Length: 436
Image (cartoon, rainbow, N blue to C red):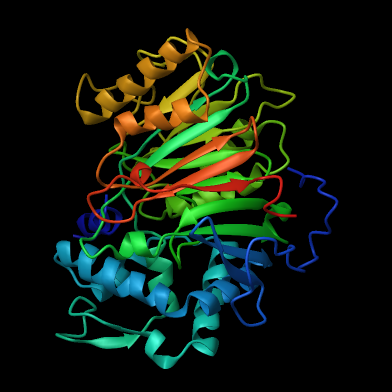
């Protein structure tokens, strides 16, 4: 019973810091060049860039969380009430209190993530109107029309929820027009008919005085502090894909994968060997089920390559322990060039890949498109967008392209259910200017 409920929880929607010339303990805000400060005196500001909201956060984990809780107020509550409770939990058959009681006994929340979530809860409690704290839902476990304030435990469990499809590729060298790395991804997710998940999508920009001083962007929603699609100022990308993989062989304690990803990408900050650094973090963060985590990076002194895929689950008795690193040129399927990696929703190396299915079809489409581009001068941002479009779905909530030829991150967010993200207008963020 406990194990089966845990599966339900997880399938509700199926190094030294870089020398930047900045004192990591300095929590002064970055210059505001693209919008007005819209909030109180906290370590954050909400801006609009190219019609999309950008939440800038700086300081300690707690300070950044406190700012998010203060600035997001009722928006965070809406995500929890309308999307998690009334859409996702409504499909499961168990109420939120039952799910939470079980999940809190299994999830291992790293200290820094807990501090940030505690900050979010405190920021909301101390600065938001009472009506922005209350959730009302038949699925809370309080009976029909039950209501109560959002609590810290709700945030802890919400950060353990997530299960999705997705397609991505990383290309460099002969596979791109300039030789610089391009990382492109579609984030396919369960979208509620009311559109709350899309309406509350936000781009978060972190300037952390902890985590080795890491600076990174996260495309997410209020209240989720881990990584789904994350990108650093240095040009490292880390994106998540669900895989029905090997289940844990070490018991039931696990680190929510969004939080493990944040630990990994911030640990890679300033590293000449990001793939090895990420692997070390993942091996210490137990998982319950399968993941394909796609890492792309600007080429370093130690690596001519620009990407790798981590086939990652909690099966410690596997020959590769919890993480199998799929490097360029190995287990690439139909992909011929060694200057690219592709990830969809199946293992290529950790277990034998399937022979067919939608995931395999998307993988083959991306591989063929990359190989064709090699013979015609390589991918640029426009060609990468077109290739993503070939595997996009009407449930593609957001799409991203990190292009290191001009140090830009382009983000598309779907405007409504039934419309792929690439049908919307993108916001273009400059990695060179975002933290100035």
